[in-house]
Image 1 (spheres, one colour):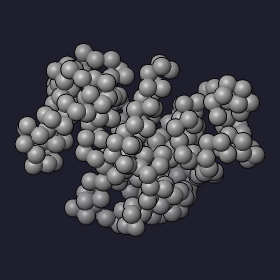
Image 2 (cartoon, helix red, strand yellow; image 1 turned 180 degrees about the vertical axis):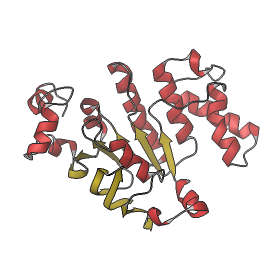
Image 3 (cartoon, helix red, strand yellow; image 1 turned 45 degrees about the vertical axis):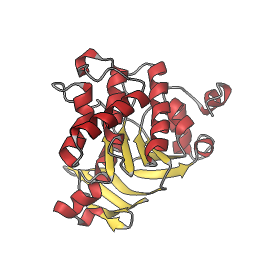
Image 4 (cartoon, helix red, strand yellow; image 1 turned 90 degrees about the vertical axis):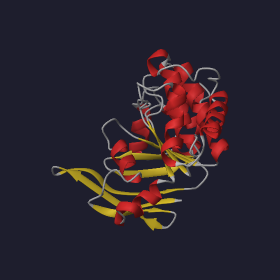
Length: 254
């Protein structure tokens, strides 16, 4: 699993992470929520080794990655897959070539095997026959699907999602979250999600962690966190996009 111990980070004297502690169980979906600008994406970048903390430890399967560099860090990163907010597809490559890219760069598979894998995963994400399309020829929701498929085709142990449904309409948001759950079954991975979409994310998460003023102040199941008596947790849900805890219960979201 991933275990974070007293993680701290400041930029130009401004504290962003002020002692974050979190355990991410294997094989489950853990979602980090919190106010915009509260450090969620900064925290995620630490987990994948893109940022070094000022202090604290991040253990991945028992190894503190904050002490690693070079090839040792790269070896751990091979366990990771990252789904970016904007899908991060190569505009000059077709959907097929976007999906084939990591296989061509990081494996010794032949083109026949690569094509077979790409064709299979396109079918799984509901985009069979669209491999010859370019990113500017498909919808935003389709781009998100391809971005996710490009990650899972490498069968990572951990998948990190940075605001996976930003800019999508509610129907497409729901389909992406359903696909995330399907992908976890496909590759038997652990998902760590940063999201502002409280309504849908509560439906798919096993654990929800609230990042508040640079610290994780509560980690629990969706059902438990929505009923938390902590003032900071109550205030977050009351001011979230969809309103109060009572509204969540009335609409059957939990």
